[in-house]
Amino acid sequence: MEFLPYLVGALVAVMIAVPAGYGIARFLDRSRESSARGEATKIIDQAKRQADNLLKESELKAKDEVFKKREEFNRELDQSRAEVREQERRLEKREDVLDQKHQVQLKKERTLEHLQRKLDEKRKHVDKRSQDLDHLIEEQTEKLHQITGMSREQAEALLLERLEIALSEEVASRIQKREEHIRVTAEEKAREILATAIQRFGAAHTADTTVSTVDIPSDDMKGRIIGREGRNIRTFEKSTGVDVIVDDTPGVVIVSAFDNVRREIARLALTKLIQDGRIHPSRIEEVVKETQEEMEKHILEVGKTAVLEANVNPVNEKLMQLLGRLKFRTSYSQNVLQHSLEVAHLSGLMAEELGLNGQLARRCGLLHDVGKAADHEMEGGHPKVGAELAKRYGETSKEVLHAIIGHHDDVTIDHVYTVLVASADAISASRPGARRETLEKYVKRLEELEAVASSFPGIEHAYAIQAGREVRVIASASQTSDSDAVRICRDIAKAIEEQLNYPGEIKVTVVRETRAVEFAR
Image (cartoon, rainbow, N blue to C red; front, side, top):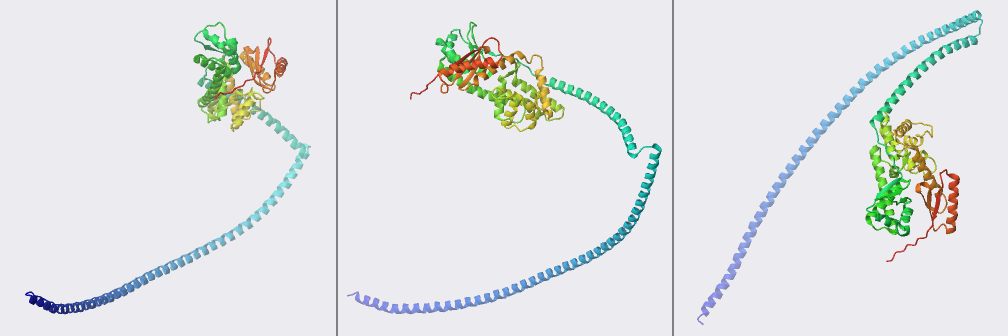
């Protein structure tokens, strides 16, 4: 109870303080509102003043801009007026010049008219003088006819006859002197060119043979090469088309064939078999086939090397293959590829001496005997065959094709490169010891022997062996029977008797076999 007075006092104080606080708050709010209104009024007034200033500045800038545009327009207008006045002055000046030219032209026309009148008068005078001269000439001619007693035609004929006699003697004399001078000069120049070419290029020549020897480690290897009952050597000779001679000569086996490619394949295959040691029919056929593929690659490489050595433009791969085969061909015992390279270099040297295209001449010389690589497979001589092959495999140069077909004077010579190739061919062939005719005839006889045997139907291969004393023929088992093989053998022998000339006798052997191959997997 003693806290009651304090509590009442506190309540009274609170009751008094709340209205007082409310009044004070109201007063403060009114003061703030009045101050805010004054501040807003000031801001509005300031904004109006700024807007008025901006408006005035904009008006001033617009007036300045209009004034500047007007001045610029006036300047452009003055400039345009000045240009127009300048053009008017130029036009007036041009008109004056044209008037002057027109006056000069009129003066020239009057002068030309005056000259034309004078020329007409002179022409008339000249015509009159010409008529008088013609009349005088006729009178003089008539008097000459009366004096000589000859007509005009007779006089002309006599004069022309005398003139022709005098000129013919003079012309004949001059022509004879000129021809003699040209002949002497040409002979001297030709001898000089040939001597220079021969001296600058002196190729070595080699004579190829028809046999190759294969070294063996011991004489026991000969028995393995022959095989049981001779089956190995028969298989080898049948697969390669060569004649293998196993005699008493110690340490070597002889491989004989007139075809150098065939003989080289046989030599390499036999060397591989000896090194490998496994010599039996199936292995022999496998090695021979592998060696044939390697030989084809080797032949292409030889052709590429020959093209690079001759320094000619790129040659078709087929032609390079044919060039490679020439390494294994001989002509009168002379290696055909070495002969072709020699002809190429000699032709190029002579062409450069004459101021011609040396590279084109070397190309003609390199390809001139390319037909010898396939002449036994196509009809015609090697010039015709070579030209057909070169044209077939992309050779477009007329000079090259003409040199191939014409270097033996088979056609009329129309290009100087053909003459150069023919000359180089004669030089290469005439070197001492370069050729021997006996071997060439022998090889040709063997080729003809194989060609006759291969011409019959059903024949797969034909090989001339035993130096041409035997021809071994492989008949197709699917196209022929045993009785057909006997008949074909007799027909081949008869055809050889009728078509070929040969010493002694030739044995014809026809082989027909059926082979079955299967794989166990």
